[in-house]
Amino acid sequence: MRLFQLCILSFALTLLSYGNLSFAQEQPYGTAPATEEAKEATETPASAAPAEEAAEATENEKITPPPEEEEIFEEEVLQEVPEAEAPEGEKGKPLPRKLTIDAVIVVKYSFGDGVEPYSIKYHINMGGSLKADVGMIKGNAKVATDISGFLAKSSAFECLLKISIADVPYEIMFKKTSEDEADINVSFKDQILEDWESLCTFLDASGAKFNTRGAPERWIGTALEKANPSLSKLSAPIDPKKTTTQKFTISQYTIQDEGLGSAEISGTGVVTIEPERKQGPEKKEEAF
Image (tube, rainbow, N blue to C red):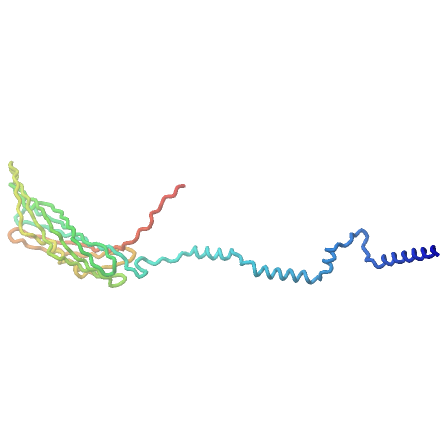
């Protein structure tokens, strides 16, 4: 009975073992058993991976900044095109100018008795700086003389001429009337007086000297009053970028000096207007 029970028990165990084998999942020959990670991957739905990748791509698009190359390129383009500079004198500020008046008056004096004539050249200079479109320049004219010949000459003596000129105060009124023209008015506060002195020397053995002086002369003042166009009504061209000029002339005229001779006077002059530009920095030499 016990043997029969053992046989029954053994048979039952055998059936149970075969049953377990029949219900177990078949594995291909030579394949290793599946791990827990593999099972989890197998259990994950196929549509989950693409969804997660799409979400990550969308998130990256939000976080990732736009390419910097385009911005840098735009900045370089703007730097390569400099802003146009406005001409000097604009931007609401008057253009500073330098105004100069130069004149030369020539006096040729001839004696009636055949004595050699003498001549005098007067060089007159006036001017200054103007900081506005309307302004005044005040000063004393600079006058230089160039004398050739003798005031008087004979076999016994010869006389040289010396001319001294006192201060010549003047005023120059300047007014810009348009973009390319200005009015100029020159006036002298006093008469221009010339102090003539004769420096004579005897030609004998003694070589004695004597000097004489007469009343002041007014050759310069009289000549400037005859300038054409008039110095009191000048219209001169102006330019913000270059120097401009306006000429005037003194046509030749004659003054009779009763009992002595006659003088022929003529002259020319020019008004120069120059824009005063700021000097840029000096260029430095680069060492190689």
